[in-house]
Length: 357
Ligand SMILES: O=C(O)CCC(=O)C(=O)O
Ligand SMILES: [Fe+2]
Picture 1 (cartoon, rainbow, N blue to C red):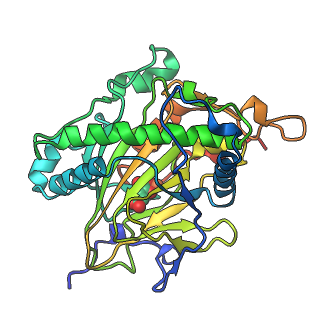
Picture 2: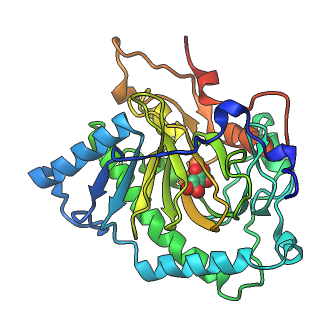
């Protein structure tokens, strides 16, 4: 067997253990009650609905992760993007690099991502849900965003229905994300639409992930440990499994069991800041295996580039003062993005850098 390229090798303490604990714990939440009609009378007064809100609040607090079923994202749209993703990744590298992401183009195909300075065993394709991305008017603070980056989607010509499959799916999953944000707002004691204004010019994106079989699953990871930087993630994973979540209660890595037609939801860094640590963004990673290809499709809900994210006034008071300085989403995003390309000697920007001591 050829020796593994050292760029993929995780430090001993970050390698997956040979035996894994399958999570009993990640809450499974039934969304049968939700409804996407805007003009629907709010069912928030009914006690069944308040149970749902409470369940979501508890999951966000105790795990930062949960799975949902009966979410109403049409299965057929989900299957279409899954097929499109497989077809795209099945193309030759020469074809795929025609839409390769680079230092200037933020979106497209990429096969050399690093997480915490170790290369991931995967390839990805990113597109933004809202186009064009709203770029704030130039001032000295925003020069980076204005002059250095291109935020246009880069659609491949092949497979033929790729773009349509991606856009159709994005619309559906975005609705689910906003509905979940309403439930999360209610669970924090806020107005249902409290977060809505942050997404007018959102920078939400969808990523297609492909983790090829890896002959060294004990040394490498499909995706190294990390927290999601955005607001909320809605993840579609296939039946292969490999996602692990760091359990808050004891720091153990717990494998999330795939459930057909479910989504895995997790809180990102920006909810952690808005909620002043009531709901924390939790570390997770992806193991690879030597036999099967694994595909996953996260939707990352993200605010507008100009958003200053800070603890919400309603959630802070004299006894619970703000724990963070404002985090400018555009700057945070760009700092994180540029560090994903190669090994770098400095740690990238994390939200704890914004903590008020
Ligand atoms: O592939 C997965 O299951 C997780 C992907 C993920 O965590 C990410 O892309 O941020
Ligand atoms: Fe993630």
